[in-house]
Length: 387
Image (cartoon, rainbow, N blue to C red; front, side, top):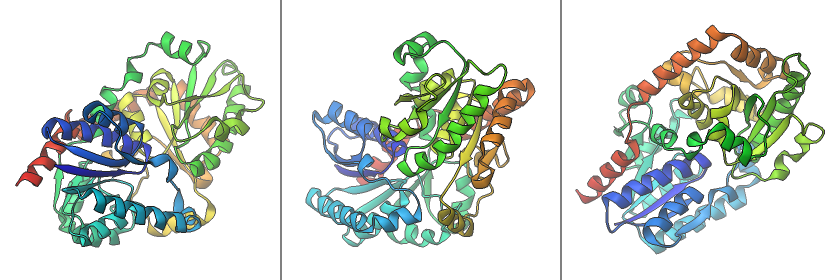
């Protein structure tokens, strides 16, 4: 069968690659064409012998309402190009992975053209923009959810779904970065054997530009503290970003503030604590077991809009899964260098505080279910198409 998959971010590329591997294993004749990134492309080359990548997600990721408006012409052009490519390929199913701003448009257009539409990793309608449920019912043939707390929500809303666990568990457990020894990680990145605080500023350019001024000022404060002079503050450079995106914040701080690219898992494994931009990275940090504080900042306009539409009590997936606060969230005006210093010092210095957080991490992992989610979802998709 023919599958057309659309992933628009780094996390979608990760989950898309594992889903593709499952589809190839379940369907010996699988022919997959996709929007994604290097991980999905690598799986395709392994199974199909050549790339079938239509567009790399790095060329299209935008953040927030204003960015979408500013890039509206390009956005609509991508949508037209996507639909033209879908019609030329004529797949048995269009599989959409998260990325709701773009993928809902594709879902509607593909449905109207008569294509079956599967949505993998449900858009977070339980947090905001609940009106999108109408579109899920109208344009999506099968929804696949990945969080246990979503089951009761979609039951109440009358949306049919399939739940097979969370694919991030497999992705983390199989991550090559977690197999690296500390010596290998330090040598690979030309780092000294000094204690590390990991800084994850997000993958989009807008996130980096909003987070890095705060994170660099936080690193300055920590570096001046007695006992922290030799610590390293290491930025997890996102695969979609370039060194130039971080260079302005490193100038004059090269001895204690550095960036490594494409090694977030290995960096988290070696860190004493982490400051993490909310999103998939925060849940990855839980599964890896690094004490964290979440920081999130939007432009003032986007923050005002977000407050009007946000419904969930937390912004971090780990806290949402537990239904209570496992780790602190510093949002917008609360995200300051001073508050980060206070919280990171507590993460490092308060052993009981760390211990309670790690126990909460274990509960989060338990609630996400066991291994094999991606392959089980792939098996379900193939069965649905063959029925």
